[in-house]
Amino acid sequence: MPPPAEAGVAALVLAAGASVRLGRPKQLLPYRGGVLLDAALDTARESSVDQIVLALGGAAGEVVRVVDTSLCDVVLNTHYGEGCSSSIAAALPAVRPDIGVLVLLLADEPGVGAETVRRLLDGRGDSPIAVCRYEDGIGHPFAFARPLFAELASLHGDKGVWKLIERRAADVREVPVAGRIPLDVDTEEDYRHLLAELEGAR
Image: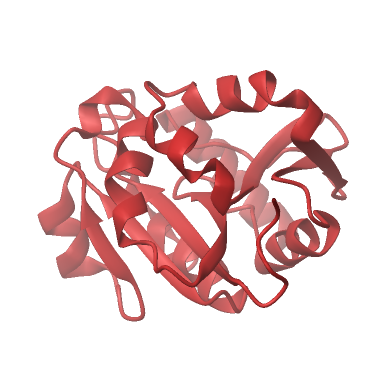
């Protein structure tokens, strides 16, 4: 059963990774006058959601000293080495009871803007799951209705969400979004590409 129309929307910003491939905290990479995590939090704030939950883990102490986490419910994932599914499980208990839809945002995809989140929410209808259909495939952000929260909490590893989407294919609505899948920053090369894209946009 879909949540009632008046149910709130929460954004869960996943920022707990250990940045193993990068070798330094990706959340704190300089970007647009701030750091990478700032971009994801700005997107969440500009999306006019009812709650923002921020999952931290790797470099959490440094992150909270550098990043403005105001208006966020911060959750510490002590099992962040087990993949992003562990962050979802750690964060779900902090989601308010009035929230009917959860939007997952990745801290390392600064190309996802508030307009994309709004398009996803507007286009999902009453579907239990909604994903963005870019020109080159499926990508974040994803939206999940409350009846799926228990399944989200039971996922494992970095690909758990994708496996849930595959398993629940009949419940998934693909919402068309202009452009290509935003760059996911995992390595120094990814970061260089991101900065080059930013410079090209200017």
